Image (cartoon, rainbow, N blue to C red):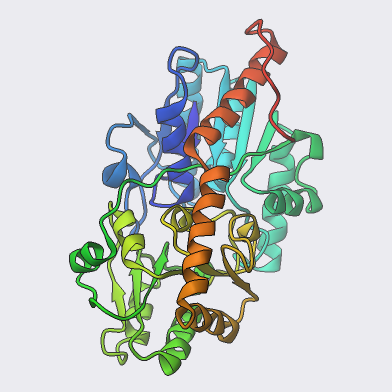
Length: 384
């Protein structure tokens, strides 16, 4: 039984979809339980995964609302008692809390939680962060396996006292990018200029992603390369602020909203840009690499496990001037940019294939089943 608060467009939804599609149905009977996406978010299931069956949980969503949370908890407990899963696997913080408490109440034998990132930095006040950490420490004691999408994410969580090292498995994201149009066709489809560099941002437009820093980068790059165009594929609570902050740039920033053909956005671009204060392991950078596009990104979370600095892209501190300088450097050096893009495709294809993700989780579940005596065969254990 898989529980996630909402299937909004982003890394967690993509990973959940890959597992729902990829795990062998003869070995694993899966059910997906989720809530509704929030305002300004797009439903990944509707955009790219309408084939995945889903159970909607009343009251489950991103925000903390005590009445709705109690309703969602009661629903999950009832469903677990009815379905009687061997394993409950939760994804993201809110579903991780409600799902694991429900699994304890319903006496589900095994519990797994995936940290697709963490809330230790950049999200809350110090007091709220301490509350989050305390809650996660308690939940970790009720969890059989903790999955982190990257080594840095795991190390940060262990340093915060969340779980023991021997509870963790590092399972990086895995994805696949559909065939894309040519650069010329993609630009025509998106209404972008035929000539001149295009820099893409793909993701939510919200505080932790620092759209204000993105605007600073746009202005600094345009000061050196006036013909540069920036495309934003996404939405979020700060979209209106972004549009207002770039209104004087004569169309230099094109906001596309969420799209089901994100491969077209990468095909139109020369560089992918990420300006976040905190990340898990950004799937947008993995997709960018699959498209053969180098990235310029802040060196936060497990970003450095996707972007090899100086080889598949350029990493920077959380500083708009440094990010802009990296963008300008790549735009002014075609050979370097193309070489990094080719290397990015090779590295990402090797490390972040969707089938590798499915295989890792298959081994994880099979290992639990073997330990509990549900199956007789012993799998090769995932890397801890």
